[in-house]
Image (tube, rainbow, N blue to C red; front, side, top):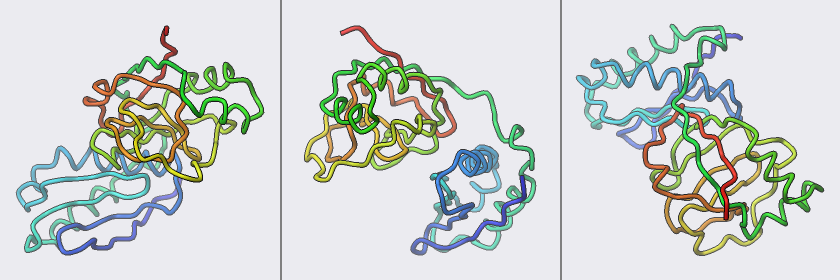
Length: 215
């Protein structure tokens, strides 16, 4: 694995971002999450005024007061990036695992099965098979974006998003899968339901496993 030289850019005057790639991939997510874990423990960033670090699929954002010493913040983060292991295995840690029971009776289960040309039961089998990586939390508080979806289940978003997707809906869109923590608009394909309160302790870098629940 080659070293990544991230691009940096500001979002407004209170957020500096480091971009490690342009496409969603497990390797890029592992790199972002490695830097996030290292810096979350760094007291120097807090001393410099950084009050929040937010990982995404391809970038890390540092939020601080607009008048903080951004050059000093940049030096701390750049040093962490420079020290990042080149071995992919060393980027990984034993994650906290969350098992989410799912009642697979979602209104789009048949649509996903038809798109994949498999049975609904096979959709469920393939969706529950992986251990997913929590690449980031976003869209809504506690909404986990999960990497590891079986490629055969990749399904386009709905043409017309729903105005109210229920809390706890387990859904897929493109190569992503995730869970809605609260009722909200959304265009993902709903496979089933889980308990939304199970999402509250999930953090970036954790692992999620779906299990078929009894009705």
